[in-house]
Image 1 (tube, rainbow, N blue to C red):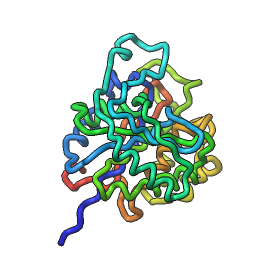
Image 2 (tube, rainbow, N blue to C red; image 1 turned 180 degrees about the vertical axis):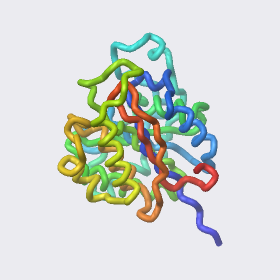
Image 3 (tube, rainbow, N blue to C red; image 1 turned 90 degrees about the horizontal axis):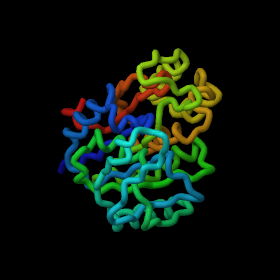
Image 4 (tube, one colour; image 1 turned 90 degrees about the vertical axis):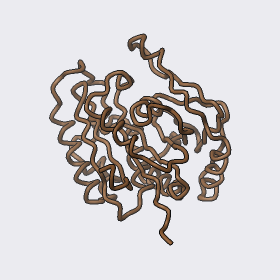
Length: 267
């Protein structure tokens, strides 16, 4: 009897909130990818915009669309992503994480932050699948992010699409106008990460702060990088990465994204 295929794992760079209205190179690729996904039961998103003490699992039945940003065009605040939550599955995930040794709690009020709903507007625009989130512990490091992904990996066999939503580079101190030329350091950092991902060099990705070019400049703080390690932890070690080249927006925000475990038709 053929085994049930695992649901894919994605790392999506969500960049700035304006990605919701300005799809650039990445948005259409996500939409095309999402249209080819089948047999997905629910979507689990780990986003840098929900950091907590310990791990929390979102168990809200009808999560609100949270506009957790300021200073952008008013049209962004009118956007909504009306996906349902999945309280029963969230409770199961909380138990799965507790069994793996994580201090965990369930949050029945949390809405979808923009690290979740902005990329999902492109990936799954009809919002028909249930969506819930797992938080990043505020003291998480790269090795811990990898372990968190490993703890979530069994969900793939149950049809749960695991999405690490972050940004390949995220230095907002250097944020430029939308069509600014790509900064050399962002290009070099992105190429280094791509090589490490393609060669499955997990040790390099965990130790990127010391080994990657321009690591501190690309990520003055680590929260937007950690979802990449969550995704790496959730993938199966023999699954090749599918690179989704999203280019660089605002001069410094690399939209490079990856997928593992895609059906053959989605490549």
